[in-house]
Each structure stands twice: as structure tokens, then as C-alpha cells.
Image (cartoon, rainbow, N blue to C red; front, side, top):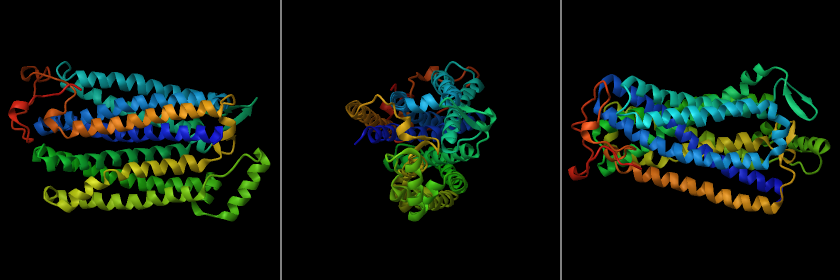
Length: 440
């Protein structure tokens, strides 16, 4: 492999792993916030249990995602100085705000939420998790605004080899970016919903959650799975319309139009030299086809689940339960397929029709340096992904009563303005092992 291929592979590994973790984080945080809101309003102990349980899994995934994000940021800064040099004036502000939102606002209020159960008033504590959710989505939006420009550059001019926006507002009104925002939000909600359904089924099989807890979690998971899938499908159709209008090479790759692709290849060689090549058409087509098929499967399963939950048949239907455990992984596959179509299909450009991938690469890098960093970062992010799923699986299967991030004595439980009774929770755990939380 040459330097460009090694750098692209490194980018794919680090960003792909980080994106998988982000999708689950964005999906779970909304459902944790909704559960918390419903508990504060109703005082239902099953909702408090659901808030803590899913909140614990969310925090684990968030923490590992931060570590994967650091690896991703490292390879971006080390390997792609050409992109930074040309487009810093365009991307600098959005990515700086994204960093501030993600690492300061989101992390600060998440810490307040984790440690505020016995210290903050109920409404203030509830506000913390909603601020975390809002910050998480704002962080994603800022990143997608920058990515939207890379897919569809708007209102710019080139001065001395650097891009400058003629109209900064155009960055925030780029239709390509906002359709991608809807698509990513839908994908994340779908990931969270099917994850919640699959884990709930596994808990029921092991007798580690009460029926009331399972009903709350399954209903919420089913609604998230359905509406997330619908949003992905609708926004995906809009995205393909934008691709046809703005990215003819990507559209030709999806459609498999070899004659058009040959013409594009000749034009690219004429502009940028012999080193510029179009991406693999079959990989782009497989990604597009996979998204469609998986989306249809998930839509059918989500509808099937909601219908079954109307009269509690979900708790006895083994066929559906087996299906939900199996399809829990499919939303992650669909998200990666969508990422491949959007990012790989843009090749050979980093900024569409302006900056090639070869031009964006840091010129001083050698194959040895990139090989070493690829091995190190590849092993690191793979280990983080394995660690994430191991921690999630181990913590999830403890059951709702034993999967808290905090340890608290019974007499300490409660908000300053009153606590809801947690008595009567049944999850199959032994009395001598019961405790409100396990410090992780």
C-alpha cells in the first residue's frame, strides 16, 4: 500500500469505530432523558430503575467513545494537514465549537447528572440529562455542518490556495448537511431502540428484570426503533436526491454506469494527474443495497414488536424475542454501510471537486510512519470496541438493580425534595446480593 491508501485505511478504522459508539450514545441519551422525565412526573419506581439502568449503559458507552474520539482526532491532525491548510477558515469554527460542546458542556453536565442523585433537586437533576442530550446532538450537528461542506462546497472562493466563505450563513443553510443531520439522528434513535429491545429480551430470558421494567423499556425501545427507521428511510431518499444533483460521480457509482464513470475518470486524470482513481463501484453499490434491505427488515420488525406490545404478547412470543436479539446488530451494520456510501463514495475527493485525497495528505509522511501508526491506532480502537461491548454486556446482564454507576446506602437515597419508593422491584436477584448500585 502507498501512503494515501494507508492513511485512508487508518481514517476508516478510527472514524468507523468512533461513529459506531456515537450512534449508540446519541440513541440512548434521549431515552434516558425521557425515562427520567417520566419518573419525576409519575414517581413510578420501574421508571427510576429504567433511568438508572439505561443511564449506566449510556455512560459506559460514552466514556469509551471519548477515548476512541481522541484516537480519531490524532489521525486527523497528523495525517491530513493538506485539508487543514486549505480549509481551516471554513472548518475551524464549527469543529472548535463541536469540541467545546462535546468535551465541556456535555461532560460537565453528565458529571452533574451522575453524581447529583442525592445532591440536586429533582428538576435541576432532570435538567442536567436534557442538557447532556442537547449538547450531544449539537456536537453532532456542528460536525455534520463541516462534513456537509465537504460533500457540497457552497459560497466559497479560493485565495492563495485557501478556501474562504463568501457567505458564512451558507455553511448553516447547506441542505446536504441538514439532510445528513436527520439521517444520522434517525440512525442513532434506531440503534438505541433496537439495542434497548434486544437487551430487554435477554434480561427477561435470565429473569433479571421485573415485567413492569420490561414493559416500559420495550415500549420505549419499540417506538424508538420504528420512528428512527422511518426517519432514516425518509431522509435517505432525500439524500439520494441531493447526490443526483450535487455529486454526479457518486450517483454514477451507485447506478453502475460504467460509460459515465469512464468519462469521469478521464476528466479527473486530465485535471489532477494519473494518480487519481475513482472508488470501487461494487463496494458503493453493496453499501447502498445493504442499507435498503436492512432498513426494510428493521421496519417490519419494529412494527411487529409494537403490535405485539399492545396486549403484552411480546412477553410470551419466543419467535419475536429471538428475532430482536438477532437484529440488535443490524442497525450498526446499516450505519456503517451509510457511512461507507457517504464518505467512500466521495473519493477521490476530500472536499468534493476541489481537494483530492492525495492533496489533503500530510506530504512528509512515509509508508513506515503510516504503517506503524495504523497498527497502533488500529489495535487501540479495536481494543476499545471490544472493551465497550464487554463492559456493556457484563453490566447489562447484571440486571437493573445491580447496574448503577453510583453506590448509595438506602437511607441516603432520595432527592432533596422527596424520593419515590423503590419497594416491590423484582428482578430475580438474591436478597443478600441486593444493593442500589455497583461502582464501576
